[in-house]
Image (tube, rainbow, N blue to C red; front, side, top):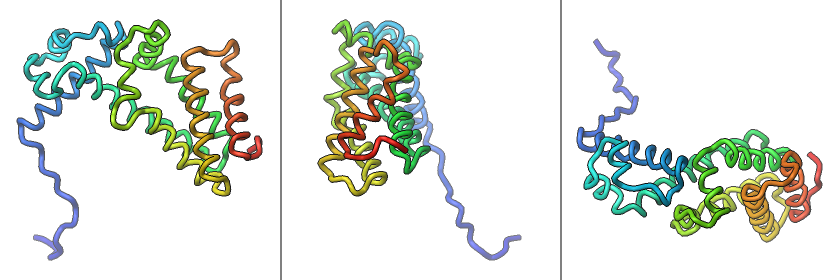
Length: 211
């Protein structure tokens, strides 16, 4: 028996087996690439090792990603998306509160450098100038730094709408540069870094340094 009304619930068809396998394979390869890069640095990641750990053939990996560089791009895109989602959540949790939000956002980024093994490996290799994964952070179609700047500019537009677009752009750029600098070379007292960067960004915005 039916009530005579057509169901409006969306019906999602499962992926065909070949498509489902391809998605699962891609996820496994990216996950293993992340793990290997965190352990030894991207320079030492080899497709043969990925194939063994992901339990997939090398031809399948090349067909999906094109080459080793394609795996690197996919890995950076995944990490970038996750970082931006986390950053947006932090900013949203402090909506309308400029200084606490900036302090929390900087603290979030610094924490990722400390606890995320992938981010830590990339930053550590950067200090030594050896890791070939770093160029993907700036050469991909939508660089992570540009994405972060755009996110901050949009948030500034909502939080301090009376500031000029030029000020918002300059503040976003400065926030990214200062935070990255402290990720690469932490201060002697890192606990003061979030408030220091927040105050500096507020000065560029021309906004008061209080909540």
